[in-house]
Amino acid sequence: MSIGAVQGTGATSLHLGQAVTVEGVVTADMREGLGGWFVQDAGDGDPATSDGLFIAADGASIHARGEAGPLLAGDRVRAFGTVAELHAEGQSTRGTLTSLSNATLTVVAREARLPGAVAITTAPDDWERYEGMRVRIDAPLTISGHHDLARRGTLVASFDGRLHVPTEIAPPGDAARAVMADNARRRLLIDDGSDAERPETLWYLDGQPPPRSGSTITLAEGIVDQRHGQYRLQATAPLRIASAPRPEPPRVGGDTRIAAFNLENLFNGDGRGGGFPTARGARTLAEYEAQLARLVATIHALDPDIAALMELENDGFDRHSSIAQLVDALNAAGADWRYVDAGQGPGDDAIRVGLLYRAGHVRPVGRAATLEDGPFGPRSRAPLAQAFRRGDGPAFVVVANHFKSKGCSEAEGAERDQGDGQACWNALRTDSAQRLMAWLGTNPTGSGSDLVAIVGDLNAYAMEDPVQAFIAAGWVDAFLPAHGPAPHSYVFDGQAGRLDHALLSPALAARLVGAAKWHSNADEPQNVGYRGANGSDRPASPWRSSDHDSLVTGFRLATP
Image (cartoon, rainbow, N blue to C red):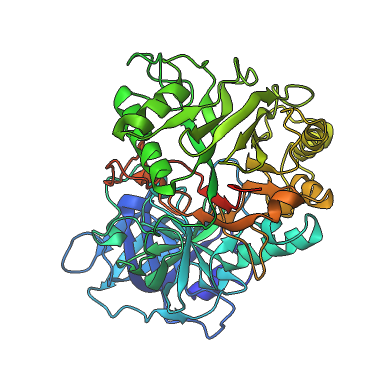
C-alpha cells in the first residue's frame, strides 16, 4: 500500500488499527529524540495526501539482508505494522501524527537516494498533506517567539512577518478571532528533533547564540511533524538565520523624560544577603545581583528623569527594601536618584508599583497619593500618583499602574474568558480603568494640574476594553500608530503586543515631543536572562533584564 493511501486526506487515517505494508526510504533517524523513524515513498500522485509516515521504534523489529546494523537515513525499508495515531495523554486523536506501531522492518537496500525535499514558498492552508515528509522552507520565516526554546528547543516562526496579538490590532470578538485564525495559518514551530526537556545545546543554531524575535530564517530543512497538538518542522540541518540586531537605547526629545518598566519581580530576599529563594524573583543571591545589575543598566541607558516601576517587592521603604537598594545601585556611580516614599504599600499585594526620580532634574510637589478601593489591592495593584515640577515649569502628575493579569485562576462569571480575545479578568481591568479615571478627577495629589500621565502595565492590549475606556474618555495614547501596529512591549506565545502603555491627558499630550519603546527584553530569548537555562549571555547588560520592554516619553515641561 502506498503511504499516501495510509495517510489519506483527513486528519486521521481511515486505516486506523489495521495492519498494512508500506515501502519507502528512511528520511530521518530520530529514535533517540522522538522514538522512531520517518519514511517516505515515491508518492501516489495525489497532492492532497502525504507521502511520509512515522514508524515508532518501540516494539519494532529490524531485519537486514546482508550487512546488519541500525536503521539509518537513506535505507530503503519494507514495513509491516499497525496504523496508529500518536497523541499526548488526554489528547484526542484529531490533530495527531499518523504512524505505524509494532512494525516489522526489512531493509531492502542501504544508502538509497533520499526523496527530494518539497519546496514550500507560502504558508500552506493545510500542513496535513505534508505530514511526515521532507520539506524545504524557501520563503523567509520570521522568528516570532521562543518561550519554549530553553525547555524544549523550539522556536516559533511565521510566514509573512511576525505574529501580533489579535486584540493588539483588531477589536475583540469576530475581528480578533479572524486575526487568530490567520496567525494559526501562518505559524510554524521549528523543533530540534527531540522531545527531551532542557537541551544543553541547540544544534540547529550551529553554534550561534539564540536569535532575537524579528530575526529571519532564510532557509529551513526538515520533516513536517505533528505532536503536542501543533505542526512543527523537525529540523534535519542547521537553520540559515539573518539575525535581527540589538537596538540602541531610544532617544526622545523634550526637556523631561518619563519611563515605565515592569521589573519582572525584583525581590531582594531579606535585604541583607539572605532569604533566598524568594517568593517570585531570584532563587539565589547571585541571581538577584545579576538581575539588579541588568535593571540598573537598563535605567541608566534610558536616562529618564522619572521612572515608573512595576513588580517591585512590597517590602516597605527602609534601607533593606527592594526599592531602596535599587536606588542605591543606581547611585553607585554618582547619580542622584530618589524614590517616592508612599509610607506603606501601596496596597498589600506581594508586588507593588513604585516611582523613582532624578533629584537634580525634577522635584516632587506635595505628597504621593494611592488608591486602594474596589479592585485595587486584592486584584489590580494599587496605583501610585505623584506630582512633580521641572524648573519653573508647571506641576505635572505621573501615575504608576499595574492592572490584574490575564491568568484565569479564581475567575468566575463575567471574569472568565469570554472567547473574544481578551482572556480572563477583562471586566475587572475595565472597572480598574474607570475607577482610576474617576479618582484622578478628584485631584488626589492636590496639585490641581491637568498635565497627567497614566503609565505602566495595564495587562490589556491596545484594542481591548480597558485601554479603549481611556481613549473614549479623552486620554491620548502616546504610541497611537499612524500606520500599522505600534511598537510592542511584550511577546506571549510568539505573538507581539502592548501591555505597557502611556496614556496622556489632552493638556500633557500637547507637550509630548516623542515616545519610544526599547526592545531590549521582549524580543530576547528567555534563556539569556539572569535565570537562563541554556544561554551564555550573562554580563551586567540591559539585555533580557525583564520580560517586558521599557517605554520612554519626552515632554516640554521646564517652562509654563
